[in-house]
Amino acid sequence: MKIDELMNEVSTVGIGGHIRPDGDCVGSCLSMYLYIKKNYPDVKATVFLEKIPPELMFIKDAELVNNDFSTDVESFDLFIALDCGKERLGDAEKFFDNAKRTVNIDHHVSNEGTGDVNYIVPTASSACELVYDVIDTDKIDVEIAKAIYTGMVTDTGVFKYSNTSPKTMKVAAELISYGFDFGSLIDHVFYEKTYLQNQILGRALLESMLMLDGRCIVSVISKQTMDFYGASSNDLDGIVSQMLLTIGVDCSLFMYEISPLEYKVSLRSNGAVDVAKIAGLFGGGGHTRAAGCTANGTCHDVINNIVKYIHHQMEE
Ligand SMILES: [Mn+2]
Image (tube, rainbow, N blue to C red):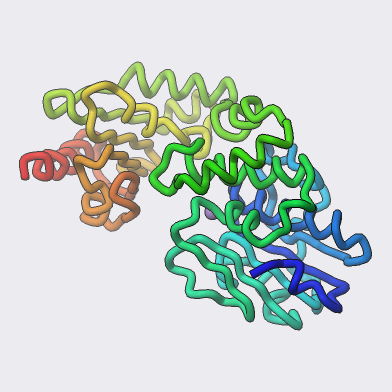
């Protein structure tokens, strides 16, 4: 599939991605937008996304994205859904339904293709990697390259997760040939934290404890501590992954109190333990190496209950 082949007699294009947009969603939508704007200057293209996280606002034309479109009605000649099927477009689903023709580009294995034309590749690292496939790479510029690269960086955890393929690296290699500062881009979209986030990360690490002969690491942040720092749940992102990087540790458990005797639990594993199974026992879910659940009880009860099952799996 090539986007250029779908642009005949198209004068309006709508572009949308999933609710709570992440780097791949924003990167794929904006790279597609920038490509159409650059190569089809007479076409009116509009991107519809929920509020973009601040660290992604550097992507060119992010400020032109339409964030509040719940009441808009428009019929596009072409609507392109990226990084999701039509059912996760949120308020933009109506534009998809009303469009004369629809395209769906995604890498989620659960998506069977919701467009008239579909390009669904579950083995691809990211929707951005698929955008690179469907555009004419002779007709891109440094801003388009940065947008695509951003989504590849965030969805692969900086080329680290198992979805990273030799092809991912080849595409990334082509993109950095446009000569942008990819080191700063990676720090900005992936590693940088606010002072508050670093403080609470430090607190969680300081108060962590090793269990199961050092193979499991556990830490808890109370509601009182959250309030002391003025932290919200997204200020805790990345803590459980950092804990897993402790030498000798196979499984990390991080939890924070959401209300008295109620905890949000995150689990990470290097593969030795299937944490999705464990989270599933407590009504949660996820993947083998990353999962979560909500658990009730005192923090000691919750830790003991969950660590018991981690222990069982390690014994098997
Ligand atoms: Mn994605």
